[in-house]
Amino acid sequence: MARRMKRRGAQLSGVLESESIADHIFRAAQIAYCLAILEGVNPEKSASLVLFCNNGLLRTGDQDKVGVRYFDLKAAEKKAFAEQIQSLPEKLRKKLGELFVEFKERRSRESIVAKDADWLATAIEAKEYLEQGFKGQQEWLTNVQKALETTAAKKLLAEIEKTKDFTNSWWQGLQKMTYQKLGKR
Image 1 (cartoon, rainbow, N blue to C red):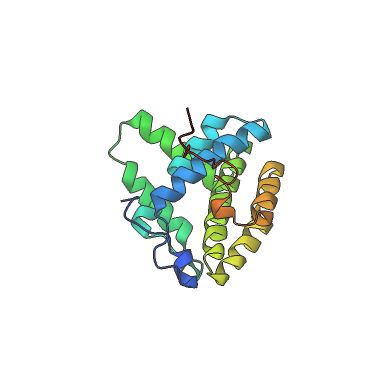
Image 2: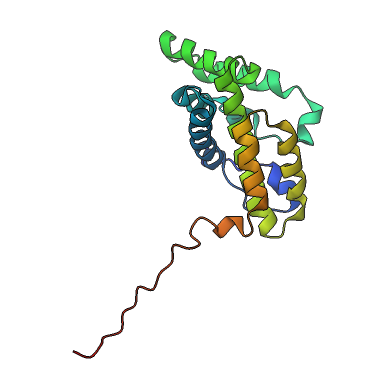
């Protein structure tokens, strides 16, 4: 389901093919792992928190900030998540339930890092869409900037924002001529 469900927020600014929930979770988990190392907390736990924190919305739907104003999303996600894990073995159900609550309530430094990673994944998505011409995405970057709590996440967002052509920056400088002329022998 995570692969099929698209993120709704970007669609408000006109993005027709927004990333999936699975895309978002994958990116956020990798960011959480890296941020945790930079912040001196457990990277495996931070990444695990991200991996399971959005499962409830696979039943409630990925509500955008406009739609969520009209119902209690926290209660709905909590109920959905509880139903999702109810048939799992008790040991697993207990652990996943603890991770879910820890993330939602930000009970630890790892959960704060995990939430910052979730926000940064959203910021990266917004920056990519902004570069494609979806101007409404600037508000997402501004909101993420206000929400971040960790030093490492704030530094990373500053780099993301100032990088020109961020979408293509990962491979710039790596291209080299692969064609070789046949010379005289």
